[in-house]
Image 1 (cartoon, rainbow, N blue to C red):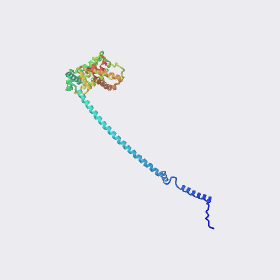
Image 2: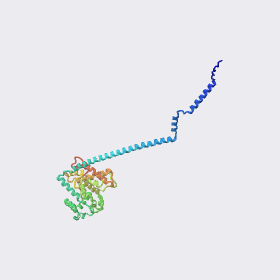
Image 3: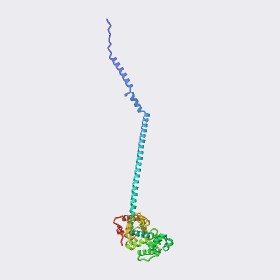
Image 4: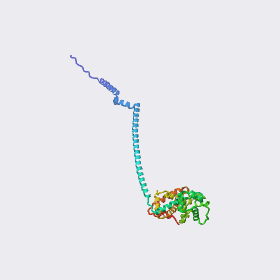
Length: 346
């Protein structure tokens, strides 16, 4: 009998055992491999490495510092360029304004170089001679002796027609105009302080104003007696506890006008001085009338500012400014045309 190949039928248990062995092998292989592969695992190990993380942030920090340095350098250069531009622009504007000021000054000089008529020249010369006559020293009797006077001053006194005793008489006249019902005191007396002189000898207060300042006070008392006495006795407004002295204040006003109108200089250098010479042509006593206006104006500003003795110079400066403004107005042909002249009363 021929041999027959007997084919063994696999047993279910063997099949199951093979399957189990295959599954165990696949499971063990799957467990031994990383989930995302070896490269991804290495990247993850690098990211979570503390040392490499520190190096990463250190490089970022230096990169930020580098950019910050570049930005600050850019802003610094921009600021320098802007500053240079502003400086150059300011220099340009300064030169422009300096040229404009120079042109204005040149035009002003042309304006001040006005033509003077023979009458204006004569009256201006006479006024300047009055300004040159001094009134200084503690003794009126010997102050003006020929030995102590310069030639210029001596000629001024001679041209004006004054003598030594004229100064004493002028003081006496002022007292009688101020206090007509009172006895005339000696030339040195404490009573002179009541008029507003700073000491018992009025002659010591004339250093700045000269003899013309005494003439101004006499003119004020003669031609505008009502305003003169109201200011002398401080009758207007609410007065300060520490008032300005009347007579000494008047001398300061004379000196202020002399400076404002260039009466001590050889030429006219101010608009007010040039304008005043025009008025002088129509009024020989324009300076004396302007003095009265200035005195009344000063007292009005004194009251408006509620000033005290220590603020006198400030009020005097503001008075000068107002006078200059009114002198520059159109339509002013004489002192009586000035708006402030209406404040005076006779």
